[in-house]
Image (cartoon, rainbow, N blue to C red; front, top):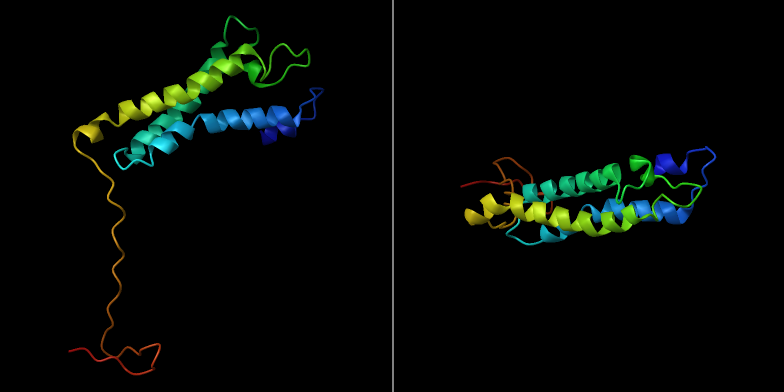
Length: 146
């Protein structure tokens, strides 16, 4: 989005187009991230879903829909207004991308689901026990160990 917005060509890019592009980027990961909040979904499966969502969005824009011209150029708005983020390709991308990323997350999670995986939290960090000769920070007294 930064590269597109700083492009100084003769294409006039609106802020709304940048927001739509940012929403598409978010749509690639929203379902796997929300699914990852469940303790039965492995983080690797959620990451696979995010990558699949990004790949799906690029694939849809690469192939286009209904033979729209310019393929990958539909990511960038056209001055004529026919292609760009408001084309038929966009609605298909916004519907299919979250669905595909969610399905890939579920499929990638199957081995962990079968093994009974549950995220039980991170292990607690063990506090370092005082050693003989250390000085207590509060009282200033020397620590003795038995």
